[in-house]
Length: 552
Image (cartoon, rainbow, N blue to C red; front, side, top):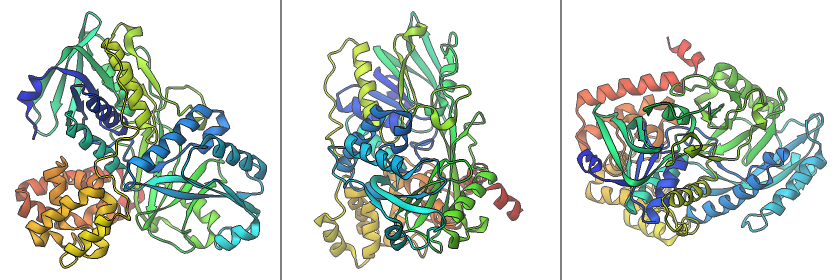
């Protein structure tokens, strides 16, 4: 529940602005160290760059090309941490790189990169790389374009199918440790005097009410708002504390398609012929996720859309690599785009802009208790959070205590072969199918038991939301009553991935709103308002222009 009176009367020692993976990681780390922490996000948790990522937990193989060895080592180390503390969400993923004559990298260069990648991940639990001859490659990938094929390299990284839920579990863990975390709370002003941020103004986006929040005398403010870092800084009072632009983001667009002729059973990491950019063809949630692009972006950060030419680029390159795919615009089931919050760098090639993060201390601008994060990746959120909290504690003059997040499992952490799953199947299979129960554990981990408890109390909630999908009605109720979901977008895009599996979510809205009216007290008028809001958002941010033109 949002108790603004209590929040306004609490003097927080750490205030985090931005609830993506980095901000959520900071809030969790700080709360676990006993720091009185508040996190605010202007939209839903994970609704920005985190939710629109390629959903990979990777070591950054291509960063070797730019000699960012420290970043690769850090990423590989953090990948191993996530495989250990979030085994229900983060799974090993074999990646194959087909190598063609005429590509920008020779076979020996890729092999040398693979060897170095293995050396930098010396403490990993995943297998080392291997190279495939042309014959072996064609045997394993029968539908790859054979023209100019010289072989392939294979290695392991990891995938997080539900990136938004990884972020949400960080929020839930932070709250369990004592943090306060609010979505739909937009920070509009930072107030500072005598070189200190003393308070901030925020608007409750759900009610429209404005609130002023005070920090303790030793408060530190952490700006982890990703692409919106500069926007947050520009809202400072009495004067702008942002000297120069900090973020120069690039847009990455993706498309989702159903299984197609020649679709690989394992992930492909391919070099595009048009511009030599790498892109991925990833098995994902019984579909395929294909992306990404890398285009400098200076547009509206609240309206980021995969353009038609980007989708055509991904379709053409996929069809080139797998000629029998013959994918067309009609095969596209969902598109999305996000902005990487990279350091501002005028004139640089987008792929060469560093992916390393920077903790920007605004003390150099006269504000001693404000730090902004520039950059940061999904894979390395935990390391970033540890560094941020260390820096905040030093500013507060405290002895820096050790972070526990390297070993602390996420709330739902459970191996997907755990005996608990079979126990729940035996208990509930009369009302929930075996496949649906396993599906729940792959999303919620051990917290799937909470979903099944709702079914135990109300058996009809064990029914599928819509025929053909494994998601059950109890998930909708749990999203609202247990996971701070306030909108249809929260439910269909981030607590579940219904939007990506059912015609942009339009087909599932009647069923979801019926559940909300019956079990969550939503009125018919509220549901109608939410449906309009949902359509508006999807049309602006996800529905391709070519699909819009067809529908009108």
